[in-house]
Amino acid sequence: MAAGAVTQDTSATTVRTARRVPFGAALEYDHFISDPDYTALFVSHCDMIFPMNALKWDALQACPGEFDFSRADDILSFAETLGRGTYGHTFVWYNALPQWVEEIDRPAQAEAALIDHVRTVASRFSGRVPVWDVVNEVIAHDPAHEGPWRDSLWMRLLGPAHVDIAFSAAAEAAPGAELAVNDYDLEFTGPRYDARREAVLDLVRRLQDRQLRIDAIGIQGHLYPEIPIDHQGLGRFIRDLEALGVGYRLTEIDVIDWNLPPDAALRDEMAAEHVGNLLDAAFSAALPRSVSTWGLSDRYSWISDVMPHRAGAPNRPLPFDEALKPKPMYEVIQRYLSA
Ligand code: XIL
Image (tube, rainbow, N blue to C red; front, side, top):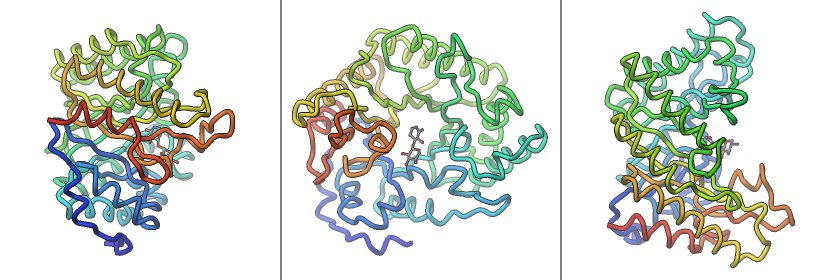
């Protein structure tokens, strides 16, 4: 594996305490290779270590039929060697598509490409990746006005059937893996979020009506502290899923802190409180199968690129700060996860 740059501090593995729910984080390949201290933080604290981008379509199949599994393999082998869990993100997304896929304009060609990609990737990692986000972000941002499905190349060419096609191919090629739908904005208070939770439940029923296996929902958990968590609504959603035989995971937790006060200590407290509100609402309904954050330290996060702090302060979206020191958010997560 190409992780020779990573210095292994085996004593760090003792930092992890027994947890009733596994904790993990998404790891971007470039940082995995270039920043050994950062990677060591995953070793110290994560029960699951998984690729942030290396299993997305553009990373695996940039040209038709030419697959490059090397980066995903490196991260997965790293996790496996340490005896940690992993996670597969993702087969089907409207984003991270290479040019050749963006240029597909015939339904039959889209269906063939979709089936081939899912089959090839799922079978390549069969027995190694225990969970797959089969589809990511397929629910419309605002289902009442533009939904229920989100616009994408797949929707335009194949309609909602593209989700059935992906689940069917995944079930066949990765029979032992848990199959999930992963989406955002499922935890907040307000009609748009109610509609999004309803749309996910409808999608689960749609798959089940077609005898397609769906095992779990990934609740991403990209949190906006200015939008309250819907304690009751989220609890009801998780129990409704349970009644349908479907579990859940908290998959991409981070805090979008662009509107919070610049003061770092205050911001960290507010972020921790909001993550606590999410965990409280979710855990009171049922235990998730795992909890993971989207990155681990404020050193690297998509939030800084996409939603930089309004006052120009460095973003603080994650459980560890830029110097890799734990923040109040990590203590809150530990509190809920410890056995
Ligand atoms: C983001 C990654 O963090 C970035 O590095 C990449 O450039 C774009 O994708 N929801 C998802 C993730 O499901 O795949 C996204 O990850 C963040 C939002």
